Length: 256
Image (cartoon, rainbow, N blue to C red):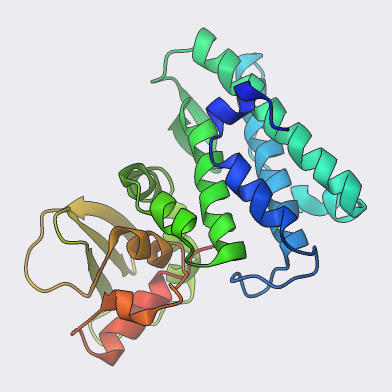
């Protein structure tokens, strides 16, 4: 059973737990290189690192964010040990997030992966990870689509995670004859998301709808596209941009 204080802070944990428990550790997922066990390892490392960085800041001894080699100890664990570690790290993150909310202003800036984020980011980012990686397990079920459709998921993906989301795609991108890639992702009734990449770097921002969209979709699909994923039903997105422009934008949106 998930403690109430954890469930209050990470309401997406219970659906994620049920999805993991309904599958074998060696089952495949929508994340092409990962099994269910790999997803759980990644999530355990996420919860641990979020708590470690925020706790160190609270203690007045800030630390830099570790890379994904932080997951190595969890790969050596048995399945029961890994499960216990995952639940323990989620509970620990909840405790640290509560302490930070009590002791720090929500506008306090904390270093995370080479940039600064605010205190609420730490619990919110774990919530996003739980939603996204639950989708990796289940695909487009009702729970996944409803969670991905939440406006805060789009906001967090663009404002809090946007720059690193584009890093992988822009590194190996062929910018084409113009030396620049620009894509406009549209969900009717909301601001567009504009992504760009050229020799000077990459950017992601909200903008008022203007001109033709590169890709138009529902909100949940747009979040998946930002994270380098695709809904099971390809008719949930459409485009008139042409294959070359679409290919470059999709390459930029490679995700993690």
